[in-house]
Length: 497
Image (cartoon, rainbow, N blue to C red; front, side):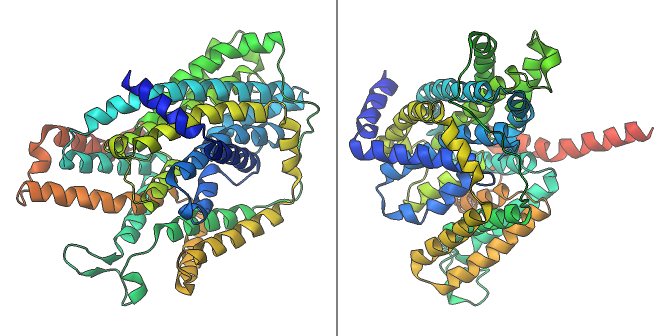
């Protein structure tokens, strides 16, 4: 009942004319960037961080939430009509959806993706509404040593999940942690990694790091792989389904939702695993398995629902524990810190209007997105015809102006260029960027929890093995680090034998 009362209060906040306008701007921007290949919601939120610094926090996060959900909706258009998945979680949609489009069924593929996204997003938001406060109540009682262990678990699992190599993920993570340490230690007063530069004594603004690694690096990488000849399938009329499409889609929507939400909510989650699981499940359960690989509607409906349900699930650990489990969630965490807010169990108490306004805006944004995506699908499809070089140039200019506006500092622009080149190099050599950003954003928090735990134990490090919950989580961290290499070594020996 408390959750419902708080949600109604959140709707009062989200339904104010100004916040409705920000929600509409957010979902429109989100759909726009989701449709354009190479530009995802994480990059867009990163670009908007300097611009939104002057906005009220509630309005800014309502817009960010719209971009987050809108990016998921828009990504399916690119996958289906252009066969270019913007993110790894859209690979399956491209696999089956583009085949449907080539058979003249683009409208049905876009419709099942949009309606499935709406249903999964709404159910996921309902689960978020009731699960998040309950988890926050429990999380309040977690001691600092266990919170430190939870962050370690997030570090390890995210480094292993993103990218093709756990080792590259860990290298990226340690790079981010090192960047997060730059500046003056507030307890000892010692400078760390400042290289004798007075500009670095206050640390490196995480907005500069995030925009450099994510926006500049990603744009340079995508531009370096730009090809002029891209086959865009034309769409006549809005997205629509016939009775048979509805009959074959509704069960995959629900099954995809059931898979996506829990995977998004765990620290090692994300959207890739549930979308692949959903595809495999639908292929096994389908009465038309011969259509898979040639354009099966179940192969679009299930994974798209899983993708969007995981987006709602990602917000559970972010809001209740302050743990991001995706690239966009990491940028959102940085946005919270930009406003001096720390996501976690106390956020529901200290900033309840913001949290519940944000959750209520997710319901509203979902309805807006359905209305924007079904009848206006041909309009979004035409965006794929925009010359890509104009787009890349615009992102670079917007990034530069945004970072310069923070402190009017040329030194920040030099840092931006350096991080941009590093970001490009990481993408070029398959080092995932997300662990680095999570290291920058969460590193100082982990250090703070570690120091608090040590102070509470009078400097006794055995607190990390004596406290039962802390010891259990650290044991999982150890298993996550040691077990996969052992299993791979055994597999190689088996193959060699």
